[in-house]
Structures are given as structure tokens and as C-alpha cells.
Image 1 (cartoon, chains in turn orange, blue):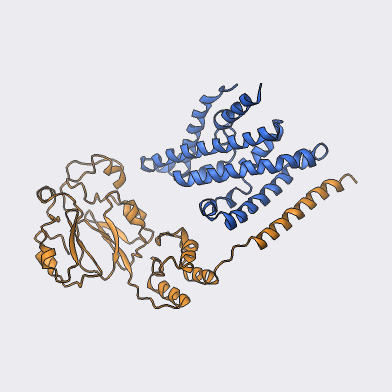
Image 2: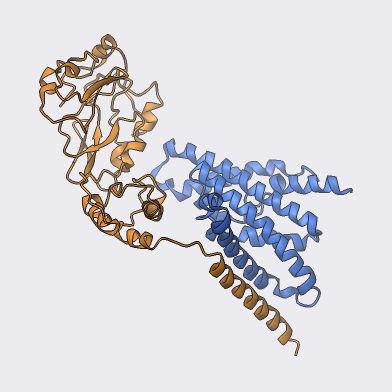
Length: 255
Length: 194
């Protein structure tokens, strides 16, 4: 008889708790949008966070709630955006995006850095080994961050392979100089400098730097270029890739 | 000893001298797993503290009025059962009524369903013979101690990110060594509050 009591205690408690949970999940269930599950199925499930939400579940919930556009998924690209568009019943015209490093790394070195092979470590030593405080250090933190092997360093310069790059943006957060941005793949005219200092100082440190002379702004017919913080900025939505600014730039900072 | 001083000494002991992670070595799994960033470490600690206090509030009466004096050997199995159930219940209730807190703690709650730090504190309350009120204080202090350890260690780990570590120590080995050093430093608190 003695063994029955403890067995009953545990069994009854288990039963009560189980029933309690079952009832709780029934009566306190939060209604979920049916589309959310369908949207979630379309997403690749990489949980990379490139869309800006907490993983694919979070993004699916945001789309279902109408808070997010369906073209934010970088690894899924255009095909995922189209699939999402079908679920939502809207037309998607999305262009693929790629990472882009806004520096040609033509600055001289001001000292020889011999520490850990990491841009972050090097940037902590007097702002990095380059004369240009804004320039690419070139020790490959972005290469290590890229899950797709799309970034490599050739002759000390960071090269993004645009065919492999998914535009997930993992490299943008690790660059200590914040040189990497995600741009539309079909934008062929880009400013390859991020130096925010004024003209004369910029000329001193690098041969291919934007001195904010404004030539490109004047020559641009579609009004796509403006100067921000002493650097030319091209709006990819307005740019028609005519290439006039490339020829106008005396510093070869636009390619 | 009056009750105010005992509350203070329990709080001090839980946070510093008898720190859950660094002195009793309970809850090492989240300590190593969720301590990569300070903000996730903080959210996790809040969830652990919440569950510790609620679990104590539920298990103490169950032990005292149901299992005492004949079935005390059922302690472990009943406590695990109850803690797992209430963590699930907390999750459901939070999701329904307090969505912001669910969004902040949601992914951490399932992780601590059967966390040994939570089970540990409920069982230690019984072993130490604390009354109901002091048990709750003890659970709170253990949670705060867990939070202190997590945030300190998250800080240490963010320093490790930029350190030049030999290849054979990269990853978990250096993390464990760092954890040992942090635990060692907490040994300095031994003796405070008797």
C-alpha cells in the first residue's frame, strides 16, 4: 500500500499540470495568421537576420502583420521575394543586392602594423596603419565574416565577388571603418571613397580620394549625386548609369 | 538574528559569497552558452531570476504541505515536473497578456525549463530550512547573483574577442579558463556576511 501513495501523488500532479497546460494553451492561445506559416515556408530558414528581424520566424510574423516588405530577404533573393509575393497576392520587382566596399585602399601606410591579423585590432592602434583614417585596413575581418566565401583580398585590396554575394550584410557590421554597404547589384556607378575630411587633407593621404569638389554633382543630369560629409553620395534610385561622373572625377574616386 | 539582517545576509550570500554560477557551479550551460553579448546575457538572467522566484513560490508549499514528512524522496522528480510545467505556463501567459516581455524573454524561457540552477535553488531552500519568505529572498538573490556573473562574464568575453589567442585555446578552452579566473576572483568574497 505504501508505494501507492507516492505513485498517486506524482501521477495526480502530472495529470493536473498536464490538464492545466492543455487548458491554458487552448484558452489563452494567441491567434496566429494563417499566412504566417505559408510565408515562413517560403523563407530559406537561414536565420541570418539580414532582414532586420529576429530570424525567419520574426520576419514572417512582420510580413503577415503588414509591417515589412517581402523583398528584405537577402539570402533568398529575388526567387524568395517572388514566392512571398504570390502568397501575399502582390507583384514583386526586386533587384538583387550586393556588398560594396567604399575604398580603393590607395593610402600610404603611416606605420608598420605587426599585431593580430584583424582589422578591429589594427584600428585600435592609432586608428589603423593607414594615413587615411577612413580607409580599408585590409586585414580581412569581412572575409572572415562572409559565410558564402564571396569576399577575398587581392593585392591587399578587398574584392567582392558579386555573383556569389547574397547581400546578407554580415560583413557590414564587422568592418571597423564601416566601409561596406549593401547596394543594388545593377548600380554600376559607385563612389569608392569614404573620407569625410576636407579636400587638402584628403589629397595628402590618398591618390584616389573624394575631395568633395562637386564636379560630379554639377555634371549629373539626373540629379542623383549630392555631397554629404565631404563625400559624394549617389542615389541608386535616380542614377541612370550614364557614366558622366566617372569621367568628370579628377580623383578617380567614382567607378 | 532579526529578519532584516537575515534578509540582507541572504541577499549578500546569494549574490557574492554563494554565487550560483561561480561558487556552486550550477547553471554553467547558459553561463557559457548565452554570455557572448551583454544584452542577451541580461535578458537571460532576467528570465532565470523570474523563473527562480516563481518556481520557489510553487515548490516550497508543495514540499512543505504535500511531501513532508513521508515522501521527501520524491523531491527531485516532483520539482522537475512542477518547474517544467510552470515555465510552460509562464510562456503561454506572457505570450497572451504581456507581449513585449514575451518578445524579450521568449526564446530564453524554454532553455531554462530544466536548468539545474533553477532546480538547485528550489532544493537548496528546502535543505537550508528557510521559511517561505526567506526562500523567496534566497531565490531572488540567487537570480541576481546569476545576473552579476553573466554580465561580468559577457564583458570578459567581449574582451576575448579582440585578444590574440593561440590556436589551440580558441573557442571553448579559453572561455573555460576565463570562467575559472572569474570564479577565482569571487573566492575573494568568501567570509563576507559570515
